[in-house]
Length: 214
Image (cartoon, rainbow, N blue to C red):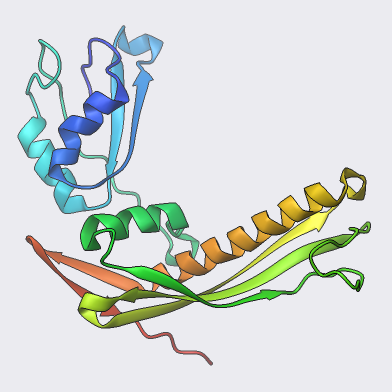
């Protein structure tokens, strides 16, 4: 998005472009010195189709300023499949809420296991952390789409070294909770990676990919 005379608030851009579909991110930057005064924005959609619709509808329009803006589609960079980054768990939830509704999907934790390398103690919840030890949790969960009779299972492992035992038991318990949460988030990301959402106009089809293990 080019030819912005002033730096518009991100919420103004969000209001305009979210009409065309779910937005991944909205960012505003000042022009480079060689380009003269002004601003430009980078707006990312989850769907390429929505991005095309927004470009066709908004290019050379005034939108939120007196002068027209120039809207161009970004160049698609070919990504190596093995290096493609997965959406994090919060983005997965945002996408699911948009297409299925807040009550149209759910997650269920199947197993949350403590794999921490810690000294045995009578109290499992309060353990004095030792040098070179770590917190480690394994999580298995499933994402459920009742309306589509679809379930997707994901797993995740999170580990956090305990480098500062002098911080005390309260800090240890907080780190334990954070590590548990991270394992759950990784499992959710893994589960959503196995779901393929095919958008067909105002309707969509869900396909569950089956993983083959050697």
